[in-house]
Length: 554
Image (cartoon, rainbow, N blue to C red):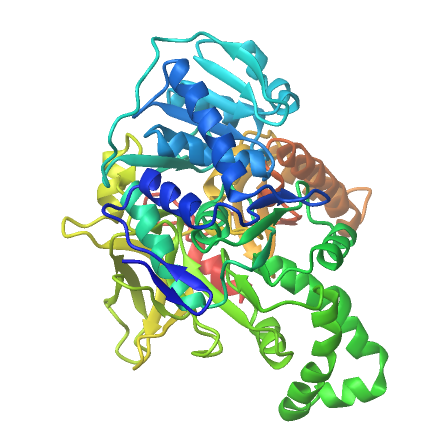
């Protein structure tokens, strides 16, 4: 039975499948505004449904149906969102691909996933060399509504969907062995978004949400799209990279009640606007020097910030990566209602959420409904151990990779997150770091340092390499090739000073950095290189002891 809670409509489904979910959403909110690009009026939910059905029919008529894979490559727009929903609601499997991925990675994912259809733009399609690929039943220009390529099969019919049917595969960048395809089912996605809004409490059918999240990322597609339409909200997309100027203009025009984004956006706001403002004024500097005075200062500044957000903000939903403690303190004191989420792609992605009322600074919140968390092998002194998760949100496994699946999923359904943390007496989770090597990018992307190191090692100037995160930047520690090292030592001993010889080597390594960055998506670019003059400390199996250099990094 439907239940209305304030202006938040809740509903039940006979089964957790996205076709049933979409039908219920469209019946409840038919005449409400749904999706829009910045600068355009939103279409209604009824119009959104019509566009979705057109794309469903397009796929089915080309022989694409339940179980077939369809890639979506492009900027986050209403057309992207509608295509994504159309794919999954006929039982096909969505394969979202970040447009920032290198061309060879995009082509590799299309081949590896055995994709039958592609929604993209002509510019991107030609840019990553898709025009040289063949064998697709349909390649569709989703902005211009044009067929770019087709080799249709026998038309398909709609088939009943099951909760355990595969809904999407989310791939990490790379065609190497480090690339993983996370398989999420209909039950994974629907159960995850059904529980999230109960904790948020600020999404309703008169909300206006400005999304700053990439839809090809689990946080953007589930929390930033599906959970928004679940409550009948209007969702606006920028349609391009959120520069400060564009963002301020969009906020003023849209006047969102909800702002969803990754921590980097809020941290940049603090670093570029709040911190300089405090530094310029002696009174502000004095207030910032004491904890109680600082809270008063943040409250004082908060009115200005809320106005810059459009003046109507009811809630900022932040997730995808850790938020700095100082920025969290500022947002709370500035009276900007803030909800923090923690998750990972393998959990669809939501694991915990902190509600606006139940705030504990430094915590990522408590588990969402029906999700269990346990700490394995906790330290007796601190309680910190490995964070394991179990619930209907946990992935089906990694695509065609049973070994990697077995490494992270236990037989009784526990997901080993790879995080270290502890639970307090109220079951609030506190994270202390990654237990594996993965680095979380500025927008929540998974960055695998081994992939970057592999590219560095392909350069003749590099003998050994280690990639670390330092103050939010990726830094490559490089032990040069014997020839380059010998050259530095010889020149330093002969006709140049040691410092001059070192600078010449560092210039060579800087050229390596630029070369490798040209083969990486922007979010995983190396921002600095550091010359390592001695070999790295290694294990008996000749692997670099990363912990040694992590400790030096602290």
